[in-house]
Image 1: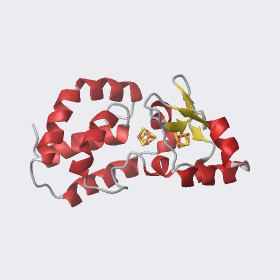
Image 2: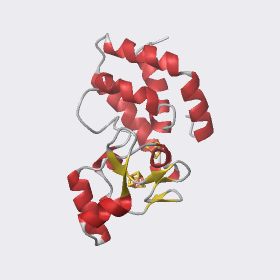
Image 3: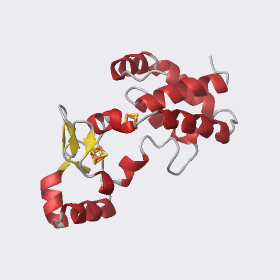
Image 4: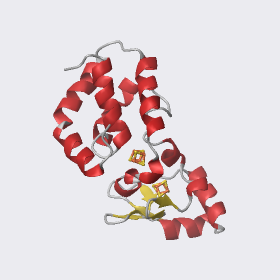
Length: 167
Ligand code: SF4
Ligand code: SF4
């Protein structure tokens, strides 16, 4: 199991083309979703995301209206104030939680989420291997990119390649 974030970045990028092939491999064959999910659960149980927090540094979070309401309530401010203070417009014009390239999400402090109890649903379900709608093969397009920074996804993908006899 590889946990070092520098290694994950290096290996994930190096295996990008292979992982793209694996995505197609899963899509064009019938695999037991149960088996893939069981492997995901076993890998996820071994990780403590609070020791990592890499997704909070590298991804953009688009909060839903309900996320904004919950976060505003948690912080004791109005939704209007929340939007002004804690969100920004991304390159693709969507509204995301304020972030910087250097520090990541505005709510990240060290490896801790300062709004953990009220964090957006997208954050609590990340990396969405176990949670969320859709089968694993249908979501593979996102996992190829996530394998380049998330240790759970990287290690799961390597395990899934063995399970499906991909090479
Ligand atoms: S809200 Fe919290 S969990 Fe979500 S990206 Fe920001 S720091 Fe991470
Ligand atoms: S979901 Fe992945 S990137 Fe995010 S904290 Fe957990 S192991 Fe790290």
